[in-house]
Image (cartoon, rainbow, N blue to C red):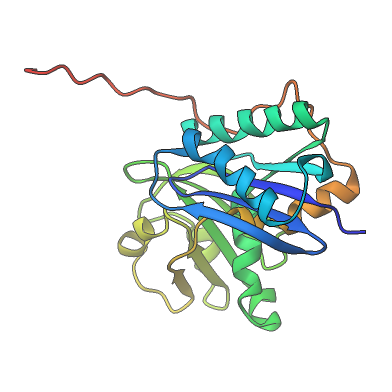
Length: 236
């Protein structure tokens, strides 16, 4: 039986919420380039649940993007997910937004192309740094998610073989285009970034496997410590 899962994704400037029910996404909301995650997230939750004709108690689980990504965005998403789980007495599922993104992108290709390619989803981490993972077309992790500084030799071990096709995607991928240069086996997929819709397959897999987080102690995968910017003082 297919579970009913509320999906929350807040790891980037795009906030998205979706409701997965009866094997499909039944409602979704998203807003790009927003800093209003805290104000919008629970509104989106209420809207997708109502649109799906569901009562909150009818959820089987809540799935949240675990990171890495925006420190503030992740904190808002995870705290909201935990609050919902406590209030509704539902299990918490954590999903890698990069793995979900890679799997969704792979599904946009034909089976043979996806099976013989590697996908490198990236989230912008500021300056020339990205949070990046490396996955096969089936979502198998080839390399752990890391904070990478993009330079000429980045990912050379994966792109040195001409027969190996490597696809970069996500809002950090454009940083690689000029630095890595043109190669016949190197491709960039524009317009892709983490989205709650893409989390459904991994969330469903985790639900059936009973892979739930400890709601009290779960924290996002920040990858790096938060560094606050210096406050601007007028006249300095």
